[in-house]
Image 1 (cartoon, helix red, strand yellow):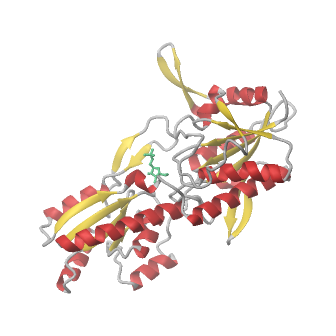
Image 2 (image 1 turned 45 degrees about the vertical axis):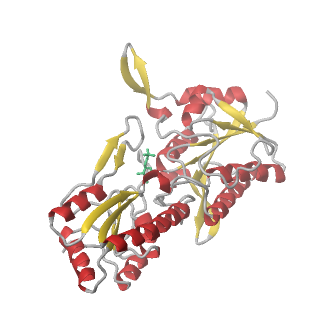
Image 3 (image 1 turned 135 degrees about the vertical axis):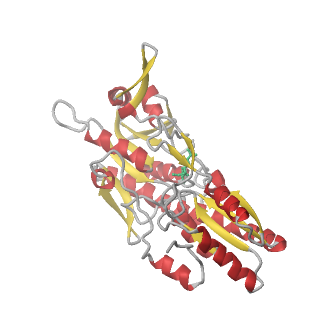
Length: 378
Ligand code: F6P
């Protein structure tokens, strides 16, 4: 079997910076002279179930630091604690986590490093809880937080977020020029699920006129009011940035689709179209268009800020392995690398509480003082 091993997997939606973490972890383990070989499981937890992995070395990971996506591929399904299996032609959900443990034992994997958001890290916590007959951990787990949504509570920020904000800001610039040429209202839908961080940061940096976030239910009348105010001063175009999870006061979030077997099955989407249609029906002076930036926000190379954060997370994870300090997730606290127990990250429940934007957040105040409207319902 050779040396003991570290297994790495990337789960959930990808985020720019995943490869930079993998790249760094491998190199940091080598420079710290940790006595492990490293393997990467493919397609997240599915790789653990199928024992599908590749060796990861300094040589075969050369040149990936700046690359987007994940060389290990990802899956946003495959929760092994609630795994869909067919029994007599009927789909049932079973705890198949022991298969993963057996596979890891077979390969000599002693440490599992999990890169993911709340769904993926919930399973990481559940693996960290598993005990053998001597009440020892079956597997030593370390979590690394990732999501473009920036909605994980236990860390100041996650990699992928800064890149997404950069992409949105760049596109807001493009939409501004065409909106101005045609005197249109353009409603731009951004990701973030039920957290308005991407819309808030990019809306301010990209000079949006209206920012709509899930944390502040909007009023259509207030959007119209802002459009009319702008028209009245000769600014006959308006840019509205809306988080996919935003909803009108008293209304419901727009659901685009349901992805069966995903820890978070609901996929949000459609709110920009809805607002554009509602504005058109209200017969405002301007033509209205909408634009959904979608997965463009997750694709491509990480920004320098995200590259730096990712390499710091990678090195911090290697440090935890060196210190044999398991059951933790690396995190950023007041600008410093730190760590927090996976139990604390996720809590006792099935899925962690997310970090949303407080209506009293400083950036909400800043945006208001810039004249940006949140179209807040009375
Ligand atoms: O959590 C990251 C994220 O990109 C969300 O912002 C978005 O709602 C969701 O994932 C999209 O998921 P999928 O890639 O399954 O469409």
